[in-house]
Image (cartoon, rainbow, N blue to C red; front, side, top):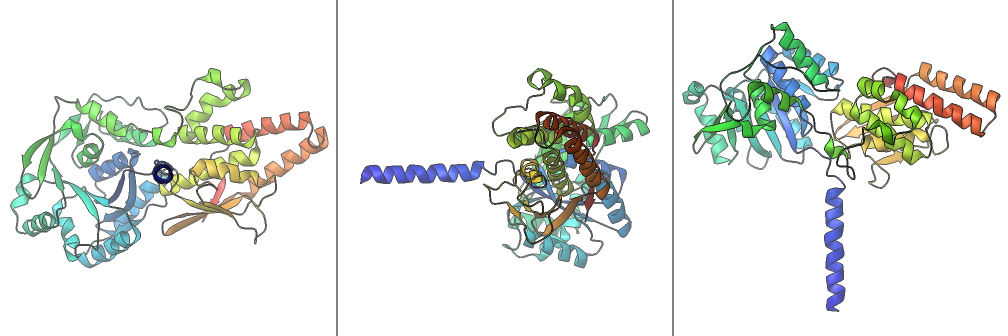
Length: 431
């Protein structure tokens, strides 16, 4: 009897551990960002986007013009699914924060690029109406003594919400962008060159602190807040910028310490497209397409399309693996159903996790709806690409016969071509 209890308890522990590990790719931080459209704020947002440990719940901003500029910037990074709220009045801020808190079950952090005064709306919430684990704000020490700021400090202290204040300026004037496949580093490099090969980090330091807090020293600590400044003895300014922009994709891997990038481990025809494909489409898509095709049993056209679609959906919401629910319209019969293998690998939303379902009530097509929290997006392969696949496959059947070795060799060549040539940012209808 005792042995039976031990075995049952052991199995419960294992089951609990596995359920946690199954979703270990989720973001460490769930962030609300408050900002304007100043160059320093926009750079700070770019640095936050580069941090793979952050899920951005929403951006609050101070004007309609700022809302437009920030939305356009997020779209340029293909993160159309991150909500941006114009919150120029306290009433609007309260309304928007209420929606964010109601939709987010996990504890959040608040990143403020424009000072503490903007936090006054949080004082309208009762304890238990929100979950904030910490607040990081760029703030001048002189402002802490103002009448406007004092009640905010008291409110945060009474609710035991840690407040980290970042101040100062850091001049970066010897930086070289050596980061591959990194849109955010490329954007910062544009600003750096535009400003005659220098950039002064101010509001950007909030994002730097979240990623590289060991590079900052505690200057003041009291009952209401901690105040930090950059410590150049721990990192140079150039290292700080580079380390903040460096992306960690290791959480996408569950078996690999790092995903193989040595050409020698890949088939010869895959080697031929590897460098250009990774350069054009990035690490995550390359990884997803490799794993998809191994799972699929052969290099498949719709399997590749599904992997690209899955990565595009994650990119749209800017989230990691295992966070998304999928309704696929690709059916259960090849060739369209091959899309489903790619969707599962690209998103981590697998059948085993209960995150994907096939809608058999509609006409079969290479399309899917992706649900993330209270937001959803529909994606479908554009007709011109769909027509190209049908035309190429028809040629293969007529020329080589169906299900012959020559036919499958031809399909492999097509899959490699589409994998290399097709840009996930252009091949889908997105609604």
